[in-house]
Length: 149
Image (cartoon, rainbow, N blue to C red):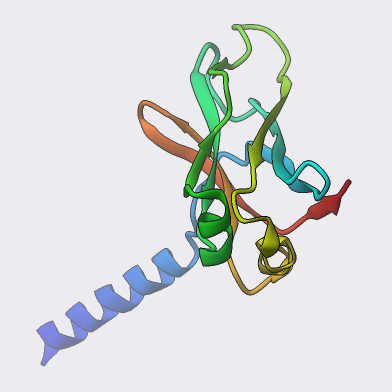
C-alpha cells in the first residue's frame, strides 16, 4: 500500500510538472498574414521573424504549412517554402528581423471565399508559418490574419 502511494505521489508530481510546461518555442514569428489578390488570383503568404532566440550564425528557413482542406485543394499543395535560406545575426550583433514572403497562384479561383473563411476561422488551423532548419522545426504560429488587395 505504501509503494502504491509513493508511485501515485510521483505520478501526481510529474503531472503537475508537465502541466506547467508548454511547448518551449523560440518565439521567432513576430507576425504573419495572407494577402488575397482576387484579380491576379494569387495568395501571398508573409511573415516577420526575429532571430533573437537563435544562436549566432544559425541557418533557418520559413515555410507555410497548409492544413485546411479547401486551401490545400485550391493551391494544389500543402507546403510552401520561401525562396531563401536565412542565417541569424553574427556573434556580437543585435537581433535582426527578417521579412519572408511567397506568392502562389490559386488553381481553383472559385474557392477564394471559402479559403478566406477557412483562414479567418479561429477554431481551425488552416495556415501555419513554420521556422525550420536541418535540426527540425524551431518555431511555428497559426495565421488567421487575411487581407484583400
